[in-house]
Image 1: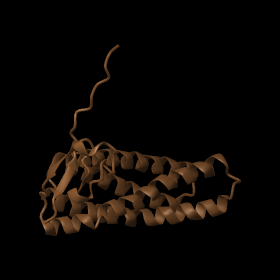
Image 2 (image 1 turned 60 degrees about the horizontal axis):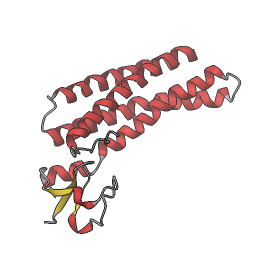
Image 3 (image 1 turned 30 degrees about the horizontal axis):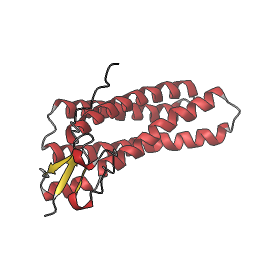
Image 4 (image 1 turned 135 degrees about the vertical axis):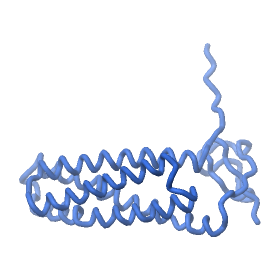
Length: 191
C-alpha cells in the first residue's frame, strides 16, 4: 500500500512520493504535511471515487441557476429573442426534476457510503431541502405548462434557487467534515 500524506491546512491527501516541495492544492510548503491513513474501506472508496453525487449536483445546479437568469432576461428584455429563450427555459424546467432525482439518489448513495447512515442532522437537513427543491421543481414544471406568466415562473425559480443555495451550504459543512483542514494560521503581529 502506498504511503499517504495530508496537508493540515487544506486537507489535501496525496501519495508521499509525489510530494514536490509544496501542496498542489494550497501551495504551502511540504512541512505542513502529516502522515495519513485512509479510514474508508476500498469498496466504499471505489464508490465514492466515482464522484456520482458531485457530477449530478453540478448538472442540477446549472439548471437551477440558468432558469431564473434566463427568466430574468425575459422579464427585463421581453423583445430580446423571447421565443428562443422561452424554449430553452421550458427545456431546462422539464429536465430539472430528472436532474434533481438523479442528484437525490446519488446523494443517498453517497451519504450511506460515506457516513454509513442517513440519520446525522446535516444529512437529514440535506434530505429535507432536497425534497423541498424537488417539490419546487414540480411546481415550476406545472406552472410552465399551465400559465405562461414569466413573473410566476421567475418567483418559483428563485425559491428553488434559495433551496439550492441552502443545500450548497450544508454540503460545504459536510465537506469540512470529510476534509478537515486543521492547521492554525499565524495571526498578524501588531505593530
